[in-house]
Length: 249
Image (cartoon, rainbow, N blue to C red; front, side, top):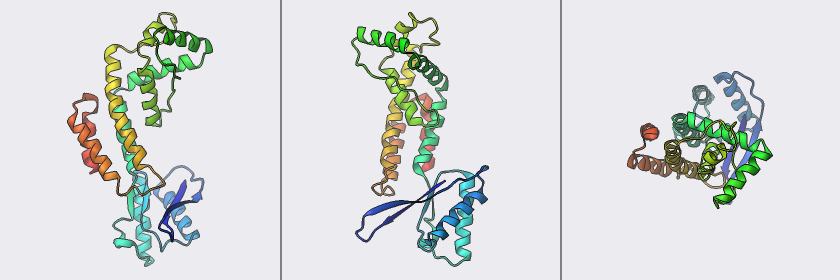
């Protein structure tokens, strides 16, 4: 677990420092998280200077922060605004949860594209043959990207890159009988629709995940922008995201 402290220095410049980087053994329950956090704050002697703790949205984190706040109250540690701003859930993490659910709606297509790209990048001969078709179609030469399934934005980059070569995949499959699957035109259209939304989420995530400028004054505007765009568009795969974005309000 990494504990990072953010503060404003004497020159009113935003600063951040890693306060602790420690192994937190499984299972990650409320007691272990609480103990690790509390020890870090005490070791740095900043338990009287805490304003807000931002942490991922998880039930054990919620309870750990509730116990930490309760402990501070028992020890007469005064929190700013009576602790109303003490526990803040990470907005970028909530966005990640929303997008992961959205990607689940086209999981089958994503798995197929991922398998196809694995087949290509794991063989120099396959890549050369694929590149030859790209040249024949006079398309820009770009690398295929393989995603990390736990990082939704890498999946977005993979799908966006694959879309540029959607006309190459069927031609390549004619030359390689082992090529597992080629998405249909309708499936490519669904991928394109989803990527339009993922671009918005990616832009918003980059803005609210900044570490060199304050973000607490930015996230509400950006989340509202996501909600408005989702409300204006009718895409069956992502209709439910609008209600989830509303819940975040």
